[in-house]
Length: 173
Image 1 (cartoon, rainbow, N blue to C red):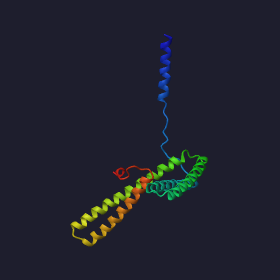
Image 2 (image 1 turned 180 degrees about the vertical axis):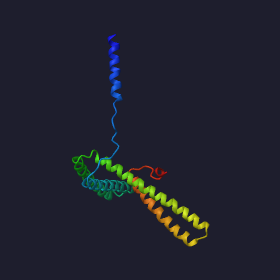
Image 3 (image 1 turned 30 degrees about the vertical axis):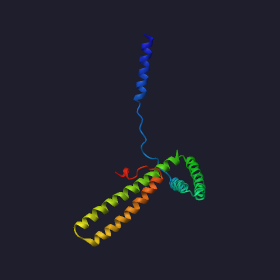
Image 4 (image 1 turned 180 degrees about the horizontal axis):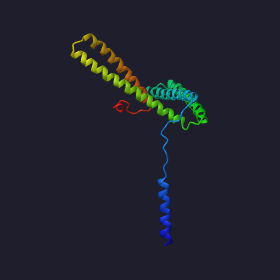
């Protein structure tokens, strides 16, 4: 009988524990302008670090070891900058600032790729409409716009891949 009573009391406490409601904190904390400026600097350092690593990897693949060594040295200095910025932000109360900056960089890259893909799509539609209506002057201008947009999209995709997004074009859909 004692065991049954203890089990019942234990189940009561377990139910009471799970029944407690907590309000989830989905809102982002407000940041001061100084923190925003430091996060922007951290994002720039993260981008530079990724770019230096990618350049070093490309130089190694080409066989240019001297250029790779300079890129690796530049990446090391960027990594030191990242660490100093992270310690300053941690002192101000931001948890895991490097991880936050990485996510922000990826989000910015994704947004740029989505914007370019959308612009490319509208330019294609404009070109088709101009060809259909036999407006060759506008079609020629749209074709030049289309070429420039493809170049911009290609650059944004390259930057997104360098910053860690595996399939940036697939993610736009």
